[in-house]
Length: 68
Image (cartoon, rainbow, N blue to C red; front, side):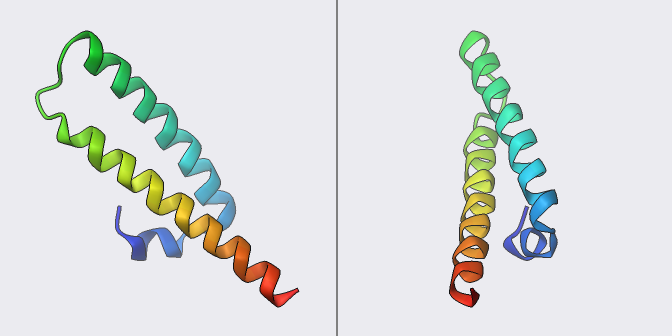
């Protein structure tokens, strides 16, 4: 997911998406430790996507504090 797509989401949608992506990431990590995945780079890509979402959430939080 690209940053432009992340910025289009509302804060509520973004929070839900972070939760689902984190759960999916955890599940992939566990299953990869049991039996290796064909493409382990997907784990890295998913971790970075989660980080991008959390960064956008933090940015929105800081912007709301500045405006208040």
